[in-house]
Image 1: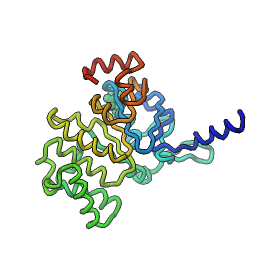
Image 2: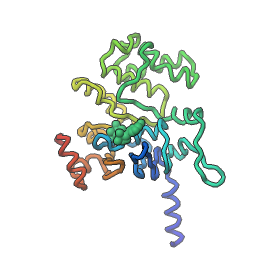
Image 3: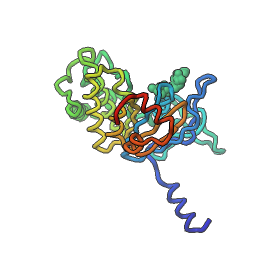
Image 4: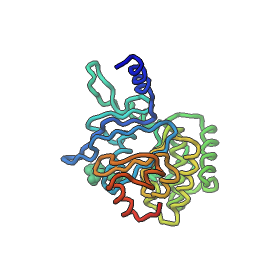
Length: 271
Ligand SMILES: Nc1ncnc2c1ncn2[C@@H]1O[C@H](COP(=O)(O)OP(=O)(O)O)[C@@H](O)[C@H]1O
Ligand SMILES: [Mg+2]
């Protein structure tokens, strides 16, 4: 290798991705559900993760959020190894739960089933993390929580309890709650799939607005036209592997692999 090429190589290797998975494998019992996932997400990028049910999409985001451990490979967030540290001989040693919790704060997660605290008002739900975990000033946290609720169109519901909200409203509160932790990236796992069809649009609108603000996002979704409009890149998974990925519009308009073609024709949407 010429010195020039060597220098180029080392510059490329130094680019820090917001999220980077390298050779991640994961099994449940005898079944390998992630078979070596390599995925890099740059800062501010919106990545839509699509694929058939059971292909491993939720497992990918759960691994990134450290809700489940990995068997091999590594996951980095802004260059920091998540969930593990390397000992003197380069072996990976799992971090203590308290250290994992600290890393997890940097990544917001929104689940299919909202998971709001039922005994707390909407405002308290949004304030809880910044107060209890980040130990921030209550007045400042309240003001910011109200701003976030305004952003998701729910300031008028701040004193309501989750049970008095529609599913779409609850999910918008869940998004505000995730943002209240000031995450550097947001992971969303099928945020609209538990909603009645008429409530899907209001949640997608909120995600669309966030995408415009440049927050790094990985969103698992079966809303293909939404992925085409909002995501920079689409990643198609099947059977624990990434089968195809690329620019969202180009990939969804003209898929290269037969498997993505078949998947898109089954989802029956006109992209
Ligand atoms: N906690 C678990 N225990 C055992 N098997 C699991 C668990 N979570 C997921 N799986 C299995 O892993 C595979 C991938 O699941 P998942 O990541 O949820 O797929 P997707 O989100 O694409 O539908 C599926 O076969 C699923 O049954
Ligand atoms: Mg899933």
